[in-house]
Length: 225
Image 1 (cartoon, one colour):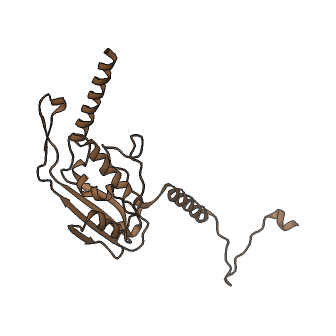
Image 2 (cartoon, one colour):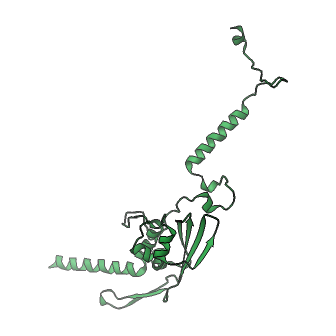
Image 3 (cartoon, helix red, strand yellow):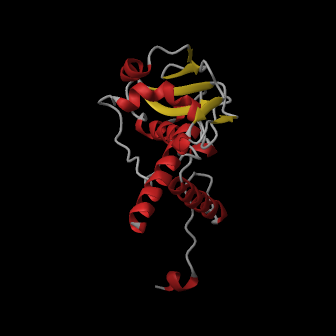
């Protein structure tokens, strides 16, 4: 009898915890951060099919477009729960608006950002969940599969790292050696190239006769052979 009561109490406590996390925005934050990974690489056509037409569009250059989606909930910042019918608890302090900015590089999503007063009580960017809901609940064929498990790459409290970007996506000028785009391999190769150039510059050059031909100076040992 005691064990039955303990099981009932533990299940009730677990249900209360899940309801609290849901109402506080924890799972919404995880969904939003999952979308930041899953939407990378999807085509612009698929993006418009599941997220709708953007509120604003900025053409950054011939290959890059920045699209902006704006969401303002009708009743921001307040929600109520009644755990186990023990009274209603009202929470405040959630964000009031979300701005989703998507970088399109050569017709594909290369970066997803969220800005604004968009945090809920638990987690980051939870207010933005309705913006990407259509894409996450019914994924398009060009979206990535991302594990949403507790031990996967998704967190409720931090956005995933920004994927590597092409130079044309971040720079409108001519091709240049941008430090921000260098990978560790590029840095190693660049250091080796600089060392080789310095070695060549330090090496003594052969004297040149007026006719334009280099004079090879042989050592005494070589000249005696």
